[in-house]
Image (cartoon, rainbow, N blue to C red):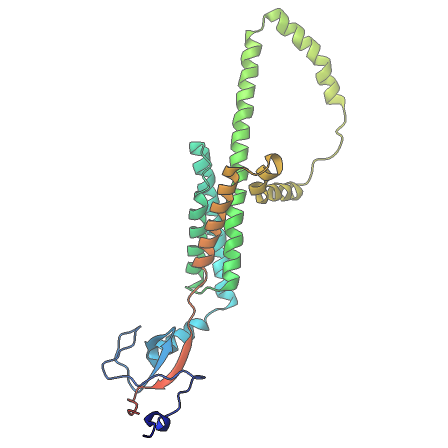
Length: 260
């Protein structure tokens, strides 16, 4: 008895082979019937018109698109910083979950600015802007609460001064007057730092704010949770700016293949 399988065609394992398609097959993107040839885009059947559109989209990434994405991302980061700080100031609660909203705002804004184009460099910028917006929000929050404490301390001093007797008040002012004149006559030890240097120092403190608690009092559960939420927010921005990638294979003939 002869072996019937020995006369059949040898399977090709090194290349992908697609059988011909029937007349009822449609493009998975525009849903139009497949004509003479078809392509495989991310394992889905596509017509030549859709493939041309995908190739045009892939070629649209340019310096101008990247620049627009950065501008939109910076605007979203500033908005996210303002919303984060405003919520904390108005409620007195510094909630790390706001980092998720900041990441979403930055990612959506960058994709809007680029016209739907994404990629690795877009993802890196989105991650940096999300971290900067969340960390820098600590500056207006800290300034607000420090100002509140200073105002409260000043009010307490005024209440204490009003409760003192006139004799005590006059003696206290007389005793304090030489000190005031001495302080006025004392020359300054050094000049004030320039505005650019002061802003740079404030910016560095803001960027390092997520780790200040770790430096001062060591790790805590709240700090770990805040860092994890911040990472998730960055991950959201990273995923949104990944863009759409297409793997295009073909063209393949749509003519039916003869039966073996």
